[in-house]
Length: 247
Image 1 (spheres, rainbow, N blue to C red):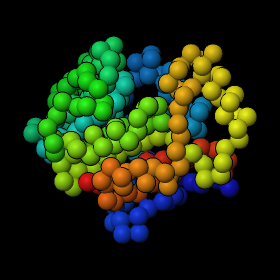
Image 2 (spheres, rainbow, N blue to C red; image 1 turned 30 degrees about the vertical axis):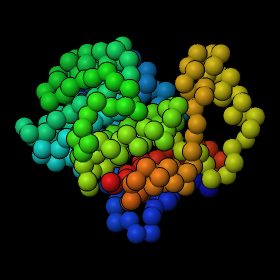
Image 3 (cartoon, one colour; image 1 turned 90 degrees about the vertical axis):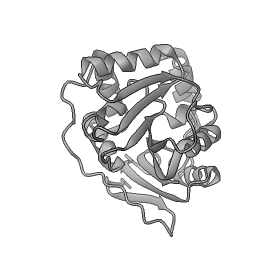
Image 4 (spheres, rainbow, N blue to C red; image 1 turned 135 degrees about the vertical axis):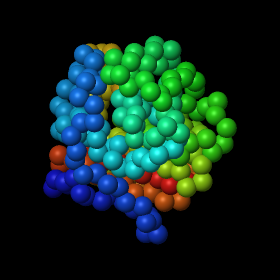
């Protein structure tokens, strides 16, 4: 059983939120550094989706508007943050946050190379203790990161705090299949990332089902959530999905 790009996995019955995920061409043609080209290649191999098209779908689902205040956390290479340049007007702002100076500097340099520095700001701070006042943002984005965060509950609670009333959290990530994954395959995956890829965060990654994600979002205070699958190779495989929640 393969789920296509329009599959709706889970939504609150009372939710009126819908994700718009029509494929569009990449927003910036010169965005990919050599490092990001490697990420794009790995993303397509792992997920089975085109990286640029998926980024464009995420930005479209965000429904950017003039004056929007955007927080991308964790920002990683800054790929999502800089796609909002030119879409939020002169009064908007974009801030990318990550926990290490190395990551933030890489994001800043990537934005500079892509000529996307206008309206972008980069800051180093812990994701579970952001130095922003309550209600500072209209949108928080998170790309391919939630499964790597050691304390998902604290992260979601902090994102809820910094969002204005009616603000949205938009997450793009892999979710666990509804069917219990094979224990042996999980063990092989952990060993690969621990000993071959040497990526400790990915080795300890925790993939949650759509129902678990909605439960965590409800606990954090979000009252409307829609999860839309973009790709699932089989019913036993993880689901790549967009999760949109409203404060």
